[in-house]
Amino acid sequence: MALTADDVARLAGLARLHLTEAECAALAPELDIILSSVDQVSAVAGEDIPMMTHALPMTNVMRDDVVTPSLTSEQALSGAPATEDGRFRVPQILSEEA
Amino acid sequence: MTEMTLLTKPAHELAALLRAGEITSEELTRVHLEQIEALNPTLNAFLAVDAVGALAAARDIDARRAAGEELGPLAGIPIAVKDNFCTRDLPTTCGSRMLEGWLPPYDATVITRLREAGLVILGKTNMDEFAMGSSTETSAFGPTRNPWDTDRIPGGSGGGSSAAVAGFLAPLAVGSDTGGSIRQPGAVTGTVGVKPTYGGVSRYGVVAMASSLDQPGPVARTVLDAALLHEVIGGHDPRDSTSIPGSPTGLAEAARMRDVRGMRVGVVKELGGEGYDADVEAAFLGAVELLKEAGADVIEVSCPHFTYALSAYYLIHPAEVSSNLARFDAMRYGLRLGDDGTNGAEAVTSITRGEGFGREVKRRIIIGTHALSSGYHDQYYGSAQKVRTLVARDFDAAFELCDVLVSPTTPTVAFRLGERMDDPLAMYKADLCTIPSNLAGNASASFPVGTSEEGLPIGLQVMAPPLADDRLYRVGGWLEAVLEEKWGGPLLQQMTPLPETKAVFA
Image (cartoon, rainbow over all chains, first blue to last red; front, side, top):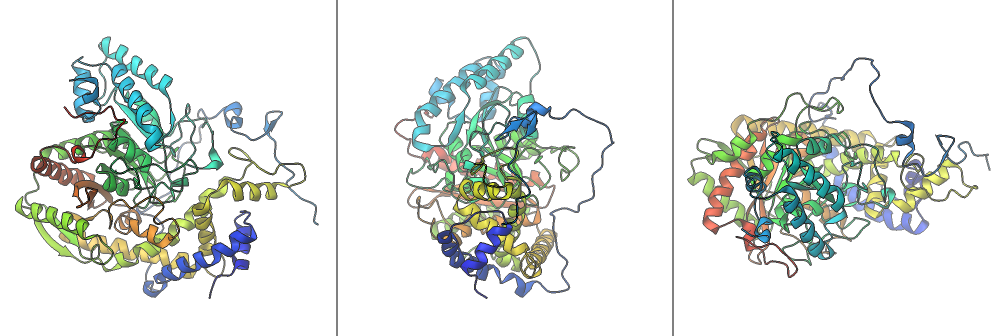
């Protein structure tokens, strides 16, 4: 099933990534080529084969619940695009419905 | 010995000169800063250079040494750092507009270890944007050029580090390898690049791309240098929950062994043939003959699922990337655009990411989002993770019969700048040989093995089971000794010096 410019636009929405119409149109065939070449993975991926998410077996790593030195507020805010009263100043989060 | 010949000496020889008091770290650092000034305009290897900080660190080491303090084996040696390692005092951009000018509030663990070991950080090196690429052409700050031929790529994503080391701007560098980003640049620049066992070197403070694949590692001109650097940066880190226990040992020793008698070496059948330059295959097979002559037991092995590794990688990797790059949302750090009072947070995030990320990054985020989205997750991401299991099983089976596996590092020599930019699939193929090791998480390295007829470097890849990193250095050290004897010196001595270079071989 070929990827259309609309599909790309929808995915861009999911990824919070603004793409122009021209970009969506250009990306669709490119991604399609890539996706059809990687599609071969489903041919060998039999049902009986387990998924491998990590290179080595992972176990959850715990530490003692003790406060250790971390960033100061100043440090944490140091790269912020905007700050106010020692906090991150961000645009309105809940927009009015159009 | 003149200042100019200091630039071409291996790090371990420079360390000996420092210990003997024949040179100071300040002198050594200054000489490298001058070389950077001379060559960086041509090569664009460095994005940021910290002359003041480097000289201060160098003087500090000199003072401590003069006071009789016992210092580590690489203390006082200058080093370049790929721009995805957080460094408190230097911008960390990941080659992206998204982080242009960003000063991290903390150091990566690798950086802390370098500082504690007394290495002198010269600056940050160029890379493909967010480490996505095989040529350093997707950097938002211009490509880096290969010192062997400035019309050609230095490899990627860590082209800045490898070009810096190959061009004698720094004796050592650190990089990160997710699909070949240390090894492939090593191969096309005639330098040594190692991807340690996954979990062997801390990822804390290395900007995450594909968390299950990323691994920081050493970049150097000699095998022993890489081993010494690996020993400095490697080892368990409580701040990285994927970090493996213990510290790497015996690597330098392995590099010095120069003996491969009795080693069982497997030539991977699937990593060759169509799509591989004839010169690359010839150089590789030449090395295989040398291995046999040196007493190694060489056999052919088949890893049939390696043929699917590239496809699996280009599903797993974008999926993890799309998740990891979600943090660049214009809220707490990095670029913010469109915050004009009319746009809500989601719109600002969207606009910023649309402008701040380059083409390749956007491509991969979209692929990743698709691979993980409802309705496609099992078919793409799920299947890819199953292929990962099959690739790992192929390795396990091969390592029952062999101590190490060998292959060319990458199918071709350095291609020309711009040549593959419009053909993503052609670009991705540069990672054909290197990707399987990232999927399986084992140890893998590239060592210089020769040049093509046109005089461009070729690398040999050695792969070892997880935790057997020493075997890489054993093969690499032996290969280097044998080949340098044949060549009458290091491979880099065959490189035509750039007109502005201050580096001269003794």
